[in-house]
Length: 285
Image (cartoon, rainbow, N blue to C red; front, side, top):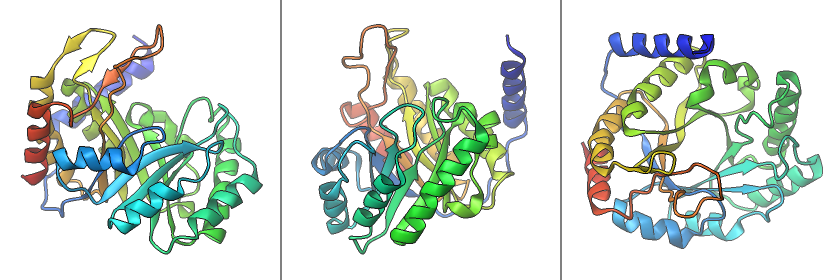
């Protein structure tokens, strides 16, 4: 086992042995998302099954047109749109002109828009100083041209132990985001470890920009809906104690037809009655 893996395992074990003191906290805002060019109608259909949400989340790249229809429909329905912007080419930031165009498009709306701007990704983050400089430049463009945009810098929970060294200056963004896609057994300890680690390094509001608990994994061909149904109440109870800004669940069916040789997992809840009921109950208690 590599030294870093050993260190992470020990730190997670310590977090479980000495959990943080649970204090009363306001429930976070709840969001629902899917990756790719998801439509408002798709999320509305899932919401009809999973209960009301105040945030709808989708993603796009700089090669895509600005998602005017998605943002407009979200604001009309009193949902806050959360957009994740990634580069269309691995390891390459978009041009300043392209970013200004996106910012000016976002500014055409009067409502607030959450923008998860270029999350930490190993392909994009080859050099901390270059990544931080490019990210800061992009953030400055949105600050100047789109004052209605609330900026998020996010990182995967799996990479939290070292990815925070790539963090841009914290005065450049409004929320620190965490994404966590995990098995039912690992979701709670992984989130607990990550939240404790990052809350000690920032005073900014923390949000879960993408949460998924796998009910099927193509690497093991294991179905585990019962385990997910049991994990959801524990996970959401723990998240409510953390004073988080919001939690977005990614209702994704990734394992339906993955590319050959690619391992994928299913995080969808809306397609299974047991999981949908468990999710609604977890959020309400």
